[in-house]
Amino acid sequence: MPAFPITSAPQGLKPSLDLRDPGDRFATRLSWLDSKHSFSFGRHYDARNTHFGLLLVNNDDVVRPGAGFETHPHEDMEIVTWVLRGALVHQDSEGHSGVIYPGLAQRMSAGRGILHSEKNDSWRLTGGAEHDEPVHFVQMWVVPDEARIDPGYEQLEIGDELLRGGLVPVASGMDRHEGAAAIRIKQKDAALHAARLEPGGSVTLPAAPYLHVFAARGAVELEGAGVLGTGAAARITAGDSQRVTAIEASEILVWEMHAKLGIG
Image (tube, rainbow, N blue to C red; front, side):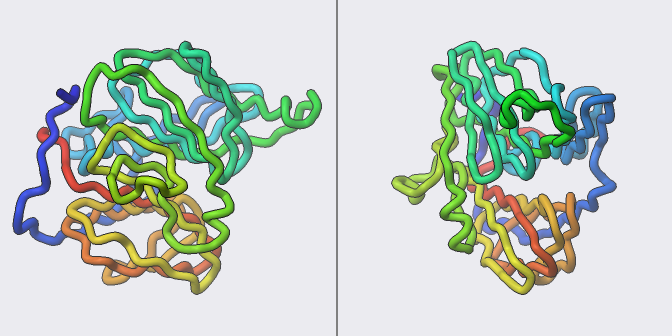
């Protein structure tokens, strides 16, 4: 059984669109961290904004060089990290380690329990010479469909697929993405897609009960809704293959979900 109750999308789900401005997000600002939270997170809590579909966390983080998140625990969560700029070093209690950079997808299954750290050790990539390159990344958490699994880790280079254009599967537990260039998550009703778009370029969103569209950088036009600037998001219920068109060079992250948390 999952750690959180999960329910299938009901029949006859009514279409709806909830646009979220960048300034609507909770913010955590420390000497080494600038973090924007799309949902309730840590000391920031709003009972009306705890999740959407199966997505619990969508954190937009910038970490200064030589700093980062010290070793801390997680349980029963599928955690996907997507770097927009710079490099992030991951280490965990299962012996996994790696450097995550733009175009490299990373998934950590927390399962029955794992400890990990994430740091901007970008000086390691320049022969030991320190520099002031921040790392900018989006970290997303979805609820797994099974609790207390063995912890796991996977990373995969998908930069070539992104260069070909279109909406590219980044992380998925859905059967139709078997064999695709995507990391696997332990959630059969969810998939993360990404697209890098030049001005005028467009993609078609999947038709799904729940879609979370996040403008990670740039600005795009969402059909029937208007402009999403950097940091803006759209929470779409009963989405029907809308088009997203870039106004400027942009990168979008799209969660396609066919179930939701049975809470709230």
